[in-house]
Length: 267
Image (cartoon, rainbow, N blue to C red):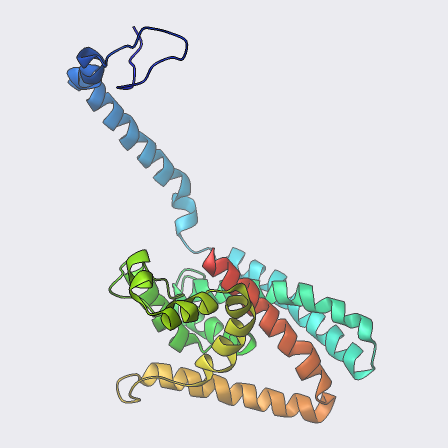
């Protein structure tokens, strides 16, 4: 006889089946069945570990290839965009979208460098991460620290607001005043997260070091070094190419890439 949910009955039938104690205890009556299921799960876990073990180690040759496949098209698109804007060929603005996609991929490579998983050598990861950080407007060591804290505190409600998007529990939201709830709703609005947010994060937050320089020397050096490199590149580009490639070209690329990146992080 099939087990029935307590209180359930079939419409049009005068008979209601009561729950069977035998049905409820069948799954617990045979310890060997439980042991077999646990062994199967363990075997399945080990199989998955063996399957992905090959991908858990850095492949420097593949990493170099992926870097070339990302950096070269990105630089070519930026160069074509700058040339077009200097000569007022406005159709080159369509290149902003693919250039943004490649910039997002560069940031993904920078992220892997921050985890020490892109190249085998630590110094190579750090060097590449710092170079890419100039293009992504992201000071490498400064971001790496925040990202490490984010991973260490992920899911811990008592350690939020570092390297992530602020999320309130229902209880916290309801305990706020009307203005506090309105502010939170505006903060979580797509316009704020995906338009205002990237500009705030990459143009302001990443430009200002936090904390004491004595205790956070690496972060301060990262921010100041990245800012200095950006200032030199912007000054040189402005003198040679003018303001259009910077304001109409690279800035939209960075902001669109930031929006895509925050959306990927958000979901």
